[in-house]
Amino acid sequence: MSHIRVRFAPSPTGYLHIGGLRTALYNYLFAKKNGGKFILRIEDTDQKRFVTGAIESLVRVMETMSLVPDEGVFLGGGKPIQKGDKGPYIQSERLDLYKKYAEELLANRKAYRCFCSPESLEALRAEQTANKQAPRYDKRCFTLTPDEIERKMAAGEQYVLRLNVDIARGDVIFNDLVRGEVKINAKDIDDQVLMKSDGFPTYHLANVVDDHLMEITHIIRGEEWLPSTPKHILLYEAFGWEMPEFAHIPLLLNPDKSKLSKRQGDVSVEDYLKKGYLKEALINFIALLGWNPGQGSTQEIFSLEELIQTFDLKNVHKAGAVFDLQKLNWMNAEYIKKLSVDDLYLAALSGNFLKKPLIKNAPSTAQTPEYLKRLLTIEQNRLAKLSDIGDNNQFFFVAQLSYDTDFLNWKQNSSVMTKEAIVKAREILSGLTDTEWFQKETLEKVLLDAAGEKRGDFLWPLRAALTGAEKSPSPFDVAWVLGKEESLKRIEDALKMLG
Image 1 (tube, rainbow, N blue to C red):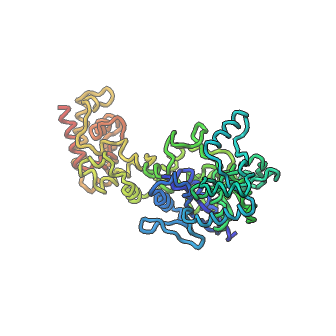
Image 2: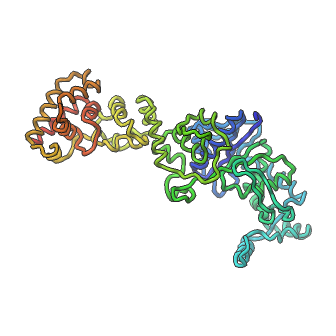
Image 3: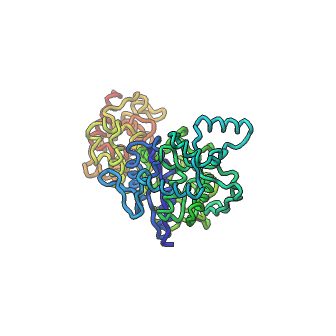
């Protein structure tokens, strides 16, 4: 299977959809599993939807996610460049090719010119809808004589090129590698537009021509393209070209089973990266949306290499896959837990998660690498995503705490008992050397030994004095992060409040 060639062919319309990432991933995994080639092609024939900079953004995200193609479009100096002997890999640079093959279809009566205006087509659709008929073109321009066509062209009338579907052909049958046999009758296939009046091809013609010339052997794409496949098969037959294999992967769904859309949450890969989801977790999570390793496996955490070794189209589901944000959060948390503190710090730093206002506006002593690494050590096992850093423990980044004196009391304890506990904590902590302080285990042992059996009486006032928060990590963890000077300062502030 070393001849296998697959492609991911996004449109540059602004961002890479999370569903597009899954399509790219499945193509990539299939190619790598079978020793084939993964091609990145840009389909920009719909110039009305083209967004400046979108190609660069798409390629950059693909590279970020480690889905680097073997040939196609890359970035060089921040600009799109192309590598490979089947190019160009950007469709707007292939217009002459499409015109050549369109002329071939015209010459063989496999396509015809349609001069119908948008108004007449709208009237036709309205009539068909009123008669409860499926909207489709009625082939009226197919019967134009050569003289009529010549006169219209001479008069400058605009036209499109339509596929000539022979409804007497019967069923169009193909085997989908995910869905099995698919059968659609030719009478249910519209005479699809192949070339627009502006000289650009539609998706259908450009897609088939490119896949053939680029020797694509397997077309793995989203379920939404399934109805288009019979039209593509008719084009392959019209040209007399060898047919590729088709595999249509299931839709991604919102929890309410509607199609995943921006109306119900984030849908772009960039959105998730900006929120602090690790690329490895995203790849792992996306892979399992519509696929499983099979053979009764319960494994859920996969490296990219493990996915390559395990991936099989036979285990792709037919039913839509629900995008479960809670599951993604769990999986991302698992990946965060596996990082060393240094790697976690670098990941947070490179993603600008350590430059959020909470940290940026903190005292300078709370912005040092050493301080932030201690914070990450405490928070690591509680983080679902990197953007959460510090959010649940904002007391680490304030110059002055604010709370009521009564907050320092443990249950029904008096202020006198509370003050005694805090004074005791001050005496113990002030006696520790810097070396002892930054050994977290030593700090914990000293405070627990001092607490004795009634830990709440001693530890609650200390934790309240250090954090001013109802919920927080343990007082020894907090003290370890804050450091000796800041911890003792906060203890003194609490004692002043108690009088």
